[in-house]
Image (cartoon, rainbow, N blue to C red; front, side, top):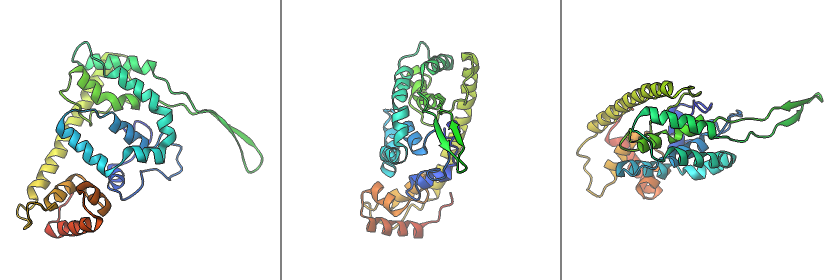
Length: 268
């Protein structure tokens, strides 16, 4: 998603932010990004409307770690205003029933909605250089494909192509194909790649969980086993994040983190 919006970041930088180690990626690089990573994350999570209890629990854990709305307001308040109405329109149009549970019907809807969406460009401005010359900066315009990609998991579920909202199914080409048949083929290939990557990640997590010691010498009320499982998904959790996740004091979180480090060394 970040690459499609023109703000490429890697997963390590995102994890650093989610786990409270750093501010959002690219926040201070002085780049002319079309939107902030914080706003993009907020729109992605806002689009996750799954009713599946496991999916909701996973989303709640993530939002306990990262207050996406507060982060978006802090680092990308203008983006919320600029894209908010268009996001709501895309969600409204893409989540209504589809004529058939096929990728072709989803592709047809995506292309139709893409033609209707519009985001007003920002105003141009004049800049005076140090030697007195005046330069005119053209207005910035904004694409909308990434907004459709945010809603793609919901569209697939609304069409009946998937049984539930699958958050990782968010790929769309940066420039949509002109015809629905071609776009449907691209979606099919992309969903196959994403599913394969998801299975690889699931295998990795299962191997890590299988290596965790079964006898930690703690009571049933101890949160140490829970923390060690959370570390598999969110490696390198900081003490404040542990305290929020487990509902304990920072002192207790620091002690628990030390216990986890001494209990086992997990390679991620």
